[in-house]
Image (cartoon, rainbow, N blue to C red; front, side, top):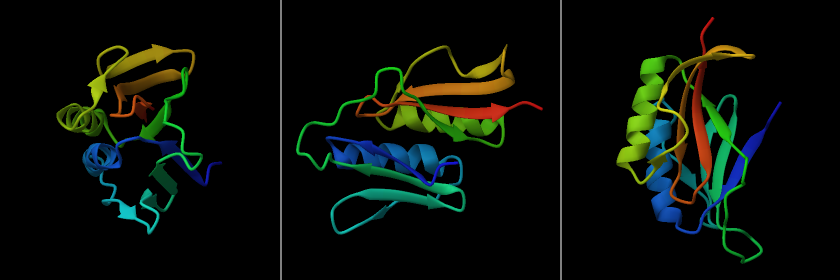
Length: 126
């Protein structure tokens, strides 16, 4: 459904360090930085990018927005979460773990990145 997701950041170095760690924890290669200073993580299923806003205004997070990253197991999600906390992220929502609800049984872990964006690791539990 999606080709890419792009988020804004004010401190590109802090954001790159954070995402290199959390995405590296789930097997995604380190970012590629283009000639405009934008950072891209590329996989066979899509691209995740970080940029300073092109309009020159400060980056801000989406209130109510969440970007979810698929993980292969709860253990991978725990590693993702730990890498994020160790690299400038802050935990948010409930602690990482398995939850049941209207969408079925899922492992979920939530973080806020250095720019305040809310991200999630998710594994649907068959």
